[in-house]
Image 1 (spheres, rainbow, N blue to C red):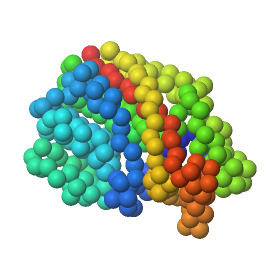
Image 2 (cartoon, one colour):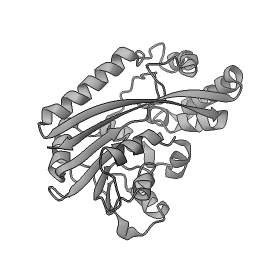
Image 3 (tube, rainbow, N blue to C red):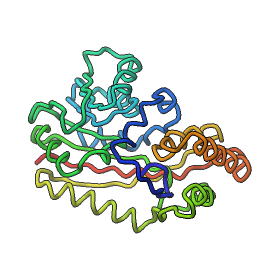
Length: 277
């Protein structure tokens, strides 16, 4: 789920939805929000991210987390990116010595990772595109004993706090999807999501020190940024052009008329960490 509280129906296969982000990598990179500082504090203080740490990242996209990993000393950093358009963007935009990173243009399932050779593996808003249990087993095989795994997602809407902007969008979603929004991602759903994630980590039987943390934060965005952000979500990008233009126009109108051209987004970033036993 990307667009926050609204859970929209789609008959478009996941493998197709996963390919839309490379259409305009520069716009995606500019519009998406960074991850909160707390994520990197956890990686450094708990997961042993340090200068010289060998790290792999699943689905780096345009490098929003990648740049922070490099800044904190990951070397070498293996980037597993199946979209060749995004891989090209990464190579041209990182602007660092390429000896510090290697791009593997592959799905994680097919990526060539040396067994037991990494200090840390991460996935930032990307792990939901994998098959969770097989991917976690491969993560465990790739980490050396005592190595760490961390996965997190930015959710543009916090099910634990009131989200006026998302509520204001609900009539637009209902009109777009002919009266059916598919439910609201509420606290019960979020708790169930957390329970499934932790159960999957325990079920692999390769990890200890399994822990989750819920990071709640806010972002104040002008109308233009909110509209650009909503335009990057896969459920927006797969719309036919006329519907997409109408929908983003409604997002912009609501931000201007109901929120004075300044929207406070309630953000939720759950992070899960585990150590290779």
